[in-house]
Image (cartoon, rainbow, N blue to C red; front, side, top):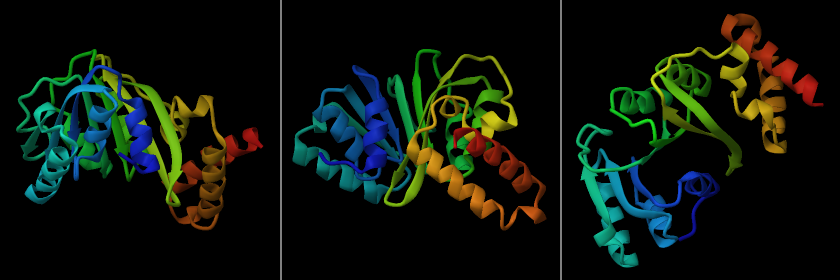
Length: 216
């Protein structure tokens, strides 16, 4: 199973031996890859729409994994009654992702992998303020688009990030790769033309400018 760079990076973050719940599974490509490589012992594919689940079911049959996966129709984790210890919510907006995970009773040992298409600083603040730890972060460029992935775990202890940690990432800031450095430079250049009219953009511009200055 060939995956996009984005999905492949998510796949690499799934712990071996997991029972995976893929929220918004679409065509089931991630769960098929995890089953194919024996990363997962069992998988659940969740989606709010019937059509992608039908496509996922057809793919699972084609690859011979229909007995090792259960497909669930419904909104986020609301209908989920299975036993999973790794959860993926990817390819959605930050508010949607937070709405999915906020009230679910995660165990402290669960691995939760998030990939938001929007508002990653806001999402970082939300998860840490509400008792999750950010234990890993990845950044890459896929098809010309920036992709940020968070790996979090629930510990029940609220803590607030600094503005720099929220904007750059508490893990990413410790090891800025070339793709992230180039993205931050381009983001800084874009903000330089628009930040004068928005206080929050001015703050982001100042934070990124300081990081870029240190990295160059």
